Image (cartoon, rainbow, N blue to C red; front, top):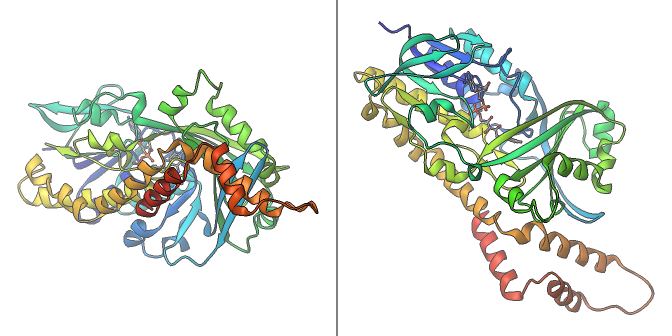
Length: 428
Ligand SMILES: Cc1cc2nc3c(=O)[nH]c(=O)nc-3n(C[C@H](O)[C@H](O)[C@H](O)COP(=O)(O)OP(=O)(O)OC[C@H]3O[C@@H](n4cnc5c(N)ncnc54)[C@H](O)[C@@H]3O)c2cc1C
C-alpha cells in the first residue's frame, strides 16, 4: 500500500492549491517543499490576478496577506534621461492584488495544512521514484523513498521532476527569461503621496525603453509599506546584446532605479530584500508533456507562465492548472488508477478552460518580440511629446511633419508602423 494517495512536490501557489483541493476531496496528501519555511525562496514581480484563486477561496483578500488592490496602471516609456508615463486610475471589475510571496505562500500552504495536508518544508525532493516506467512516488534527499498513487510536480520553472520523469527535454538558455527584484521600504504615507494612492489602493507600473534593445523592461508594484521594483529580460536577447552593451541584470536594474523618472519613487527608501528568478518562455510549453503514468505537471513546471516582455503572469495560471489537476486526479483515482489514459482528463479540462486564455496571451508574447517596442517606439513617443510641448516663440513644424521626420530618424516606415499597430490591435 502506498504511503499517501498523492505527493505534491513544491509549495508554491500551484502545489498548495492542488494539495488543498485533493485533501478536501478526502485523499491523503503530502506536500513537500525544499524551502526552510514554505515560500521563503519564492519570488515574483508583484501582482496576483484574483480570478482563479477566488473560485477556491471566495473573497480570499479579506483574510490573505495581500498588500494593496491595484487601482492604478502606469505604462512608461524611457529614452535616455527622459520619459513619458501614461496612467490609468480605475475601478477594475476583475480584482488583482500586490503581495509578497514569502507571506502569501505561507498562508496558502497553511490553508492546505488546515484541510488535512501533511506539509513538510526544508526537504529537497531529488527525483520521482520510477518503477517499470511508471512514477510510483518520490526520492527525497537522504535517499528517502515515499510511495504514492500519483505525484504532482509543482516544483517550478526548473522542475527536475519533469525532466527526470522524461516529460521534457533538458533545459536550454532559450527556454528562459530572468527577473531580478528589490523590495524597498518606505513609509506608507510616502508611498501613497508619491504614487497618488489612497488607503489600500495599489499601483502597477511598467516601463520599456531603457534596456538598449534587450527584450525586457522594468516594473514597480506598490505594497503597503514597501515597493517591489525589478527588471525582466529574455536570456537569449541578453546574450545577443553582450558584445554591444555590457549589460548584466543587476546593472540594468541599477540603471532603471537611477533613471530620473524612477528614482523619485524610491528616494530615501531602504533596501530590505533582493532576489532573482527564472521565468519559463512559451516555447517551453510546446515541448512539455503534461502528464504520464503516475505524474502530473502543474504551474511553472508545466510552462504555464506568460512573459509579456515587461510583465509576467503565472500565479493565476499556476492556480488554475492546480484546480484542473486536482479534478483530473480525482477522476483517475476513481476510475481505477492514475494511468496516463485516466489522467488525460487533465488536458481535456485545460483545453476547455485556461488554454484558450493562455493561447491569447501567447499572441501578445509574439508581439512583444518586436525589437522596435524596446527602442524605436519609446524614442518616437518621447520625441512627439517633446515636440507638442515645446514653445519657444518661433514657428515650428506641424505634428505631421515632425512625425515624418522622427519616424525617419528611428528607421520606421509608414508601412512598418501600420503593420505593427495592426498586429498590436489583433494581439492584445
Ligand atoms: C521576476 C518575476 C516576476 C514575476 N511576476 C509575476 C507577477 O507579477 N504576477 C504573476 O502572476 N506571476 C509572476 N511571475 C510568475 C510566477 O512567479 C510563477 O508563474 C508562479 O510562481 C508559478 O507558481 P508555481 O507554484 O508553479 O511555482 P513556484 O512558485 O516557483 O513554486 C515552486 C515551489 O517548489 C519548490 N521546489 C522546487 N524544487 C523543489 C524540490 N526539488 N523539492 C522540493 N521543493 C521544491 C520551491 O521551493 C517552491 O516553493 C513572475 C516570475 C518572475 C521570476
